[in-house]
Length: 188
Image: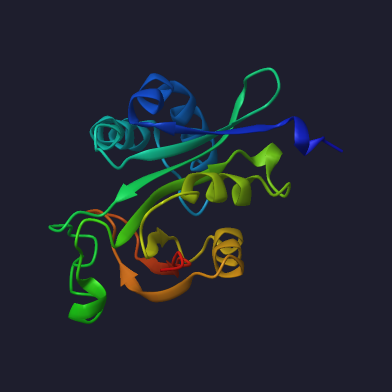
């Protein structure tokens, strides 16, 4: 049995995440090579071309999990959705205008969350999720999840996410479930 208390989860801003891009790439490539994703080397390269532009957003944040020897084993990242986001419109509007309305601070877009296979089942995904969202000033979180990824679906539901629709998150992607988590609002 592995001791989870020795595993670290650190929140990173954009510049720090960009410096750790190789670690994020390693986790992503390993976690998403398996079904139902089957990401190829080309897919990973395309994702991490976009990663660099994401890290330069003012509201970008990330979380990276490591073993005591520094091996990257899990990651998560995202940013607030801007007022002109297309996340609700692929290919058809998903929900009512009220749900789709963005003001640049209403919704945090969780772009990726992954844990490498040998470290799954230890609560690390939950720790990454909590670290990433700690202090986020938004009313909700939005993400896409592959419907065949049963473990991810179960985790998100257990954390309070609900399905609000389906979308192809990028051209050529499988149809994904769109899930939303309402965040607790600070007292007035």
